[in-house]
Image (cartoon, rainbow, N blue to C red; front, side, top):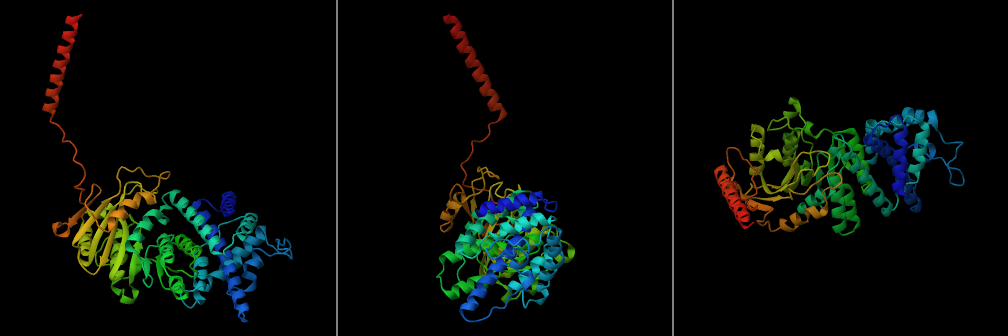
Length: 484
């Protein structure tokens, strides 16, 4: 049922002149879903308050609540066509009244960790792109059928929403920034093994895939007490995201995974001076796939000790600084980070090796990220002591990956099985940090355990063999003729 609802909404958006791409489809679906979710959340809280003999103070004023403008119903529970706005009237209300009203919550909210602040942030950054009020009316009717109350419903909705994010990532280069393959995320989380009471952070949150998967991982393993649930909801997951659409998608994704008011801040992480990061701002676990290939301006670079225009290298400095002593991190980065010869790359590798224990490097095959051909590695490190030895694991380089054959959990099974003992195999090897060149800190070590290929023969040897074979062939032909 839910899958058909999403498909029907996409079909309607395709017909509308204002929605041009998968990015628009999920953005527009998100704000509609958020308001439907908000209404059900408020209804639940009102019901709870009534049971306790208390009165619930609604966040939204009556005319801006879902039953008033989106789905006014008659006594039989059907849409009341006499009250329901449609066509130009509906678009005029949404653009002229609803969005301006909701955007003001950002200024009125006490702090960014409240649902009120999230409302204001979303509706001050995202715009309604649906131009036809008749199409919007149909979309609202479909969205009204989506239930958010049971955990089973939320789980099914979250799976479908993840599928939409994945499709958006495959749609083109503009969508790739939102999607990291979930099997890779799960493997990274399994290695870091976040525990109750620890704070988990992603400073390049995108669609919040890392935080959502970390929530699932910790929820499955924790003792289901009221205190633990509250800690997981309010004091465990933190993120920052710069782009408007990604921020909204990330918030919606976390809500669907069961986090009511996600601690996601809409900000440019790199605009923060890393020298100002205090102990209270640090985290136990950091998981991220920062954008690579971007070029940052000079004023942004001034916030970092190692100046570079490469976005991912600035993020790596931010993550190292944001880790608590003993904190663990798993960061996706371009494989060229291991070998680049520019001063910034060399200095950053030196800084990483000297301030952290870079214990594992996971090398991913071409096509692991279906939206880009860039080859990547995952750096696993712990802050507080220098690197002594690095274990490299090369995920099957012969594996052909792409949109129709994506990375899966089975691909990472051997890596996870080998991780604890870190053995020497045909796909893995160890490097003593003392062997790293202190001038270049080059970490692009080739796998020394691959079976040796037969050496290429010299041209003279090949020509000699050809002459021998020619002579042998002539001799055989001569013998055959004599027999005839």
